Length: 324
Ligand SMILES: Nc1ncnc2c1ncn2[C@@H]1O[C@H](COP(=O)(O)OP(=O)(O)O)[C@@H](O)[C@H]1O
Ligand code: SF4
Ligand SMILES: [Mg+2]
Image (cartoon, rainbow, N blue to C red; front, top):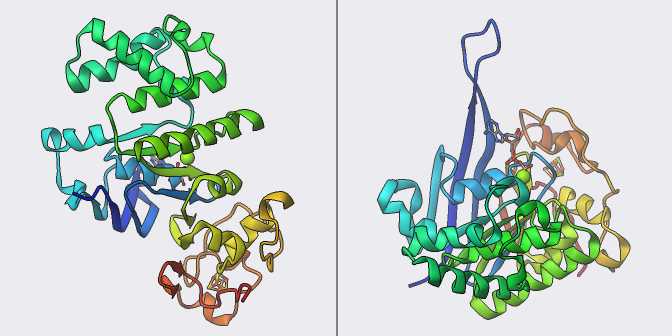
């Protein structure tokens, strides 16, 4: 059995209520034709600016958001075709660690209850065994049993993130969707959390979908990286390839904005442009309005994902040459 995750041509469209005085409902494509594979035990980084569809992608994979088109294959089973009880065993295998663990936690539950709840729901574990297992789970994430009786407000940001991780580990998952797991933490806690995630993966063989707007965090943990812009995949491939030989002008712009020690000798042919807010191009390449490499063809034809080599895909008519 392979616990590979394969996403094929995924499109997610949100339907918004009509504006006052209008009849037709509005539709917003948050993801458009997204495809990738995450091999068992690997980490795929999903990177892109706020609003590009990262959280939607995680939620769609976990069947928390309806999928408009495409397939999500886990162990070869298309999750988009399953409902209710048929989906339950798969839900257990895939867990989400939220962007803001404080919001996701019930403020009236102690850490003991927070970590134990899934043990009861998933395995019907009795109370005495729950406490023992909760203590073990907390140890795995570097916390001791003194936090068991505390409430979320009595924990630091780093401790809350670890409790959220311990809760996610309770169902013995194989895939963790980590949505901005370090965004609320200061630099040293970020580094400790990233190291903890790497150690857990080496120990347990988890697969990670690591979602972040921070390319330096992604570069530290992800074997492969996928760059999203406006719900479209701009580029994907081995992380080192994207960092040192970015082919898409948007990836190059993200790298140019990284602190120098992170990008080291990365090719930075593009200026450090942080894409401005504004409408995406409705025809041709959606990145056109921000691209300093745009040519007449880019305004007319939308580029499709093209393989530069076996593992490296880019959606651009004029990919950057990169270093030899
Ligand atoms: N429940 C929703 N209903 C309507 N639009 C949504 C909903 N959730 C997200 N969106 C929109 O979809 C786009 C992608 O959002 P999201 O996946 O949260 O992006 P990210 O996580 O990259 O910041 C944004 O334009 C956002 O406003
Ligand atoms: S297709 Fe053209 S506009 Fe789009 S990223 Fe490539 S060069 Fe820029
Ligand atoms: Mg998000």
